[in-house]
Image (cartoon, rainbow, N blue to C red; front, side):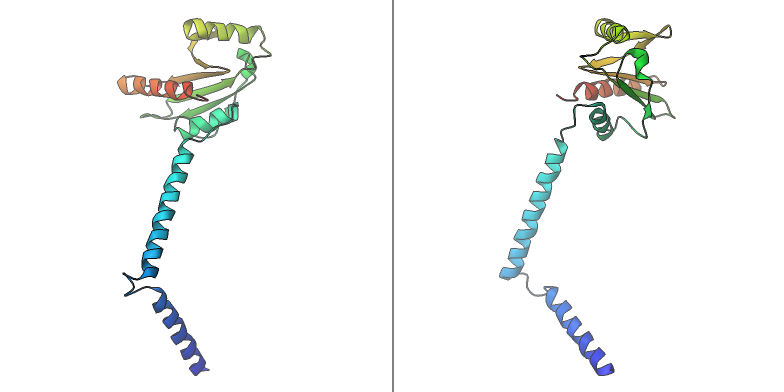
Length: 176
């Protein structure tokens, strides 16, 4: 039995050493494997570039995926009572940017073929003034087609104002 084990171990070692390629650095096999590895790396690079141009579904879910991929929305979304502002659906995210739970991001989708009075009022106000009124409070908002974004940061300063502009730009680039 020991003889068989020794023969099997010797065979495995021979196969292992033969596969490691020591001394094959200039051989045709080595050069072919390097070319294959280079080609695989190029394919991987092209795949990652195509992932950078991912198309997101034109829906609230697609907008959420887009905003998450851009690093703007984090955590689990909370469903909003979107009907209060005439939207069909909406979600809220809470997060941090150089602070502690200082960001609130709300995303809403409006149905252009079914807008009640509340929707018409909110959309008209945001188009005209960049704000809408809810519960006697002026709320800054950004409109992108059928989507509305409310971004609030409780922190102030240049860094936070710049981030708010970046988030607005990201939002406005959805489906562009």
